[in-house]
Length: 184
Image (tube, rainbow, N blue to C red; front, side):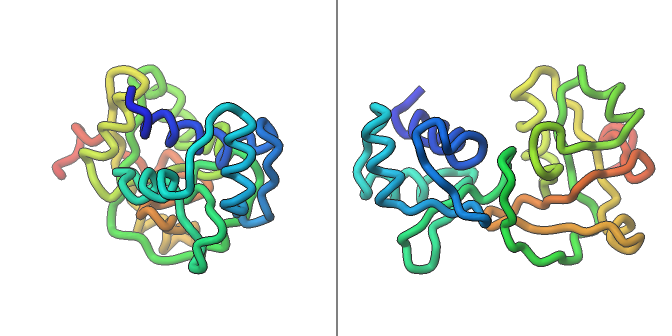
């Protein structure tokens, strides 16, 4: 694993799940002061300079992190298990979205729908391929098609994170189809 990947994974852990592990505080919207983050990363033995941090964030293929408009703060775009309010406005999703899961999760998903589990939201993709890659991280992938527009019309909210990932609180079973069971 490369150094940039290690930095990105560490940032994901700290900014999404456990800022206290290095003594960092996030505000209610998940923002951290960049200078404080860099100082605390250094103390934790994960020191990087600001230029490296900005490069890692800019070059990340998944765009997991966002800088504030003034560049002084940073936060994870989505994927939090800590309580934050990203301030995203509900918006109409595309007709369908996709969710990748491991084959071992299929029975629970078919019984209960998609739940956020340890995170704050269910994450959905506009791309079948992206969803498949997510599922591959945990074993043999299975992709579900989410009837997102029907969910929206039925009153369920959707939000789009800064990195393009779609978020919702829960996807009931009645809005799900396995991708191979449906012509895409």
